[in-house]
Image 1 (spheres, rainbow, N blue to C red):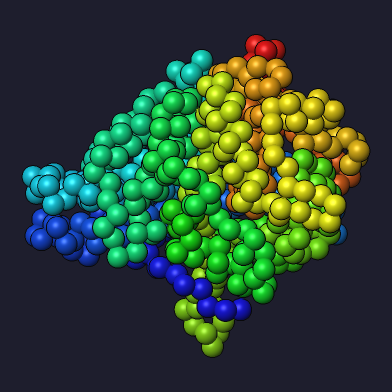
Image 2: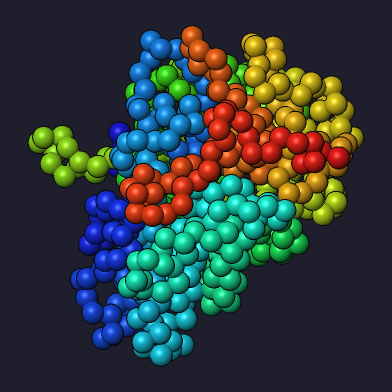
Length: 542
C-alpha cells in the first residue's frame, strides 16, 4: 500500500476519559500558558481542537445501506449492537463512548482558545482564530446532535432532548448535567456559525485541514438545510459553488481511470482537489469495516443492496455494473458480501513497526462541493425552484456519469422525466421479503415539514438517491433517513427483522452509560423497543 499524505493533528493531553465529569473538568491542553504570545499559541492550539473521532461506523451501521450476510460471517460486537439498534456496550474508537468524549474534548479545546482570546482583549489579529474556534465548537456539537439527538423538527424541538453546549471553560461540572431542548441546541449552533462566518480565513499553511472560507460556508449550508432555513442554505451554498459549479466538482472521468484502490484513495482525499473542502483524520476502523477489507463481513453493503438500492440500482443513468453510465458502477471493489467504492481511505500509524502495533486511521472529506451542490438542490426544491434544483442535479449527473456507455447516453433530468420514472416504481416496503420488493422509491414521512406529492417529491427522491450514492460507507445516509422519516428494516439471519419507523426514538443513539451514571438524562426509548415515537399520518406526504 502506498503512503498517504496525512496531516496529523496533535494529541491532546487528556485521551482517556471515564465519566461525564472527566470530559469537561480538565485543562484540555496544559502544554503552554496561552496568555503570553496568544497570536502564536492560540492558532497552534486550535490545530489540536479538530475531532479525532468520527461517527461514520455508528451511522453507517444504522442505515439501509447494510444488511445481514449470515451468521457464518463475523462481526464486532459494536457493529452488531448498532445494527440491532441496541445500546452499545463497547468503548472502542468507533463507539458512541469515544465519539462523545472526543467531540466534547474538541469543544473544550475550542473554549480554552476562546477564553485565552478574551483575556487578550479579543484583538483584531485573533479574529480568524476566534472564528475557527467557534466553527470547531459548532461542528462538534452538530455532529453530537446528529448522533445523540432526534432530527430537528420545529414542531417537537421543545420536546426533544438537546445536549449541554459549553460556551466557556467549565469549572462547575454540575451545569453539564442539563441537556436542555433540541431547539436550544440548534439555536446555539446557529449562533456560533453566524458569529464566525464574517471572520473566517483562508490564511493557513494547509487550509483544507482547517475551517477555511468554503468549508465554513459548506458547513453553514448543510446546517441550515437540516434547520429548514432553505434560503440561507442556498445563499451559503452559492458562496461555495460559484457561478459555474461544474468547475469545482470532482472529475470522476479522471478518477475512474486511476490504477487501483491506493491511487483512488490518494486522489479522493487530495487537498488539491477543488471539491475537497475540509479533510479530517480520526482514530477509527470505519474504512476497514465499511471498505474493501474482508474483516467483519456479516453486516455490510453487499451485492443485493448495491444492485437494488444504491450504485447498481436502476436509475435514469442505467442499471447494473455494465449497462450504466454512472462512473461508480465500474469501480466497485470487494465481494458479494461487501461492495465498496474507494472513497474512504485507511491508513495505519505504526508506534512499533517490529511488533506491528499502532493506530488505525480513517481519513474523511467531511465537506465537499458535490455534497454542498445537493444541499442546495434540496433547498431549492423545498423553495419550489424546480428549474434551479434540476440545474444542480444535472451538474451532479455530468460529474458522475459518462457521456455514453454502449447504447446508453448520459441523461438530462427534467421534471417530466423524473415524474415518469418514479411514478413507474412501487414504493419500497419497510420490510422487503426479497430483492423484487426493493426499490429506490421510498415513502417519506417528513419530520416537521411537508413534501408535496408529484414533482416536489420526485425531485427529492432523486436528490436523496444521489446523496445516498455519494455517501455509501460514509454514514451520511442516516441523517436523511431521520429527517425524511424513511421506514426500513435490518434483516437478521434466523430471526425477525428489526424495523425502523418514522420518528423512531432509536434514531437518537443512546448516550454512554458512564455519562448517564453521572446524572445526565438518557435518551428515551419506547416500551416495545421496536416502535417509533410517532407514526401518525400527520407527518406523511401531503
